[in-house]
Image (tube, rainbow, N blue to C red; front, side, top):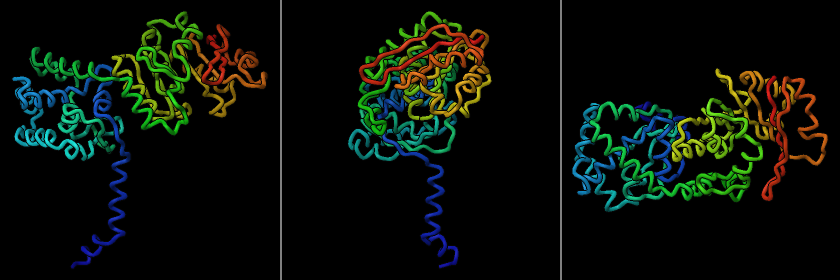
Length: 374
């Protein structure tokens, strides 16, 4: 055995190789295949259609349609890839015979939760109603084709068949149950029995009512369809997604990537095209645009920033005549509450337009203040 072979067989070398592999594959997670499908849809970019084409091919294989293979063959030709129909047919049959074995290898995605491989296997998991898959995140670009690409390259009837299948699958998703699964799997360490916010459009309850909050803030009076909004500390984005119907755009940032992921998948299911979610803390958040409104929910206390400095930073991100919504836990020491700091807010360049207290039976009472930039 050569010296090089001795090195390669050593435990030290193997550990180094394993460590390198861990750098590539940063996260391993279990999730519902339909949840991952929804994560392929962001704004107007429906990157799930390639998966849908494979599902049509599966249906064609089992005699449920007579066009799925033709569409699949055309897709592979357009992508200049080998068709490998025989290999796919064997995959379909393995899933039919032994789905518990066939779905075991991990499906590869990137940090944006977009597929980088295993499109056919995810399609099989969806078609054969596999409840849980394992995903691995790796540092690779996704090459899924967009909705516009499909519309340009396929005949109108072909595209209609693809889109109808996507709509059919989406309509079959019990999204409320899906998100409850995500909560149980991913958010138990939040020490909560339910989501922090409710989502009235989906019938999802939470510790705080999104609808009550929106009405108490009187936001319908201050927001309009021309407004670009930033929400700092958006949690899982249920409030963000509710506000989306009243504004031009709304962006939610939160330090926890999982919260932003749930916000994005909720937008995908509700088909909101004007939302955006970014995992970031406020200190490191950079923007090239100015906002018409900024929501800040219990943020500045955690940042350990003096209120005036925090408000000055927000003012730099606001359009003229823009407003901010501040909220904080109502404190036992009345002198620490927001309303006692109005002179400081005015000196930072704001005028008071609305304030109030929201009482919650399931959570702390909150004080909120709306300030207009002057």
